[in-house]
Length: 144
Image 1 (tube, rainbow, N blue to C red):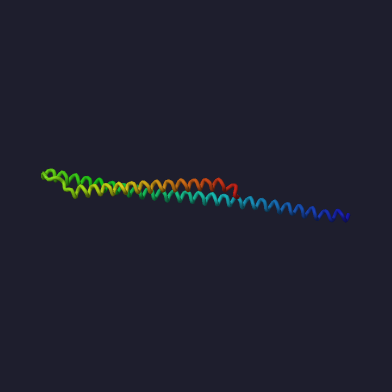
Image 2: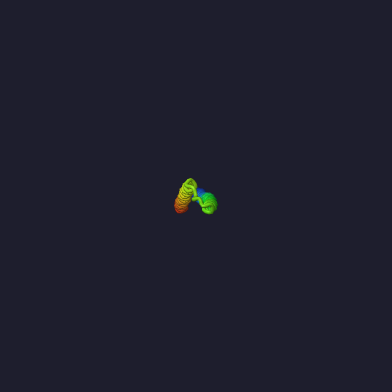
């Protein structure tokens, strides 16, 4: 009888240990699920904010480029008007006006190239960020 009583508390202790271990595993699994969810939410939020920021920058540069194009069209119309008046008077348009027009066109062409390069840089940056985000999402399950 003495041996039965001594085995009985050990069995209860083992069952208690198993129960506690099972509780810890469940708790750990729940914590892991919560952290995965938070990581995915943060990753999605970061990606969304990054895309919004790039979209805003792209819109800004497109608007600025359109304003400059509009200014160029207006100046071209004014120049045409001046040329027409000069031709009506019988005097050729002045060399200074032609030089100014040429310089302005060159300046606008440079601006156009600059903004197109900026847009391309932004697109490249977005692509890199998307690749990094995809890589992070791919690695996330293995990390947790």
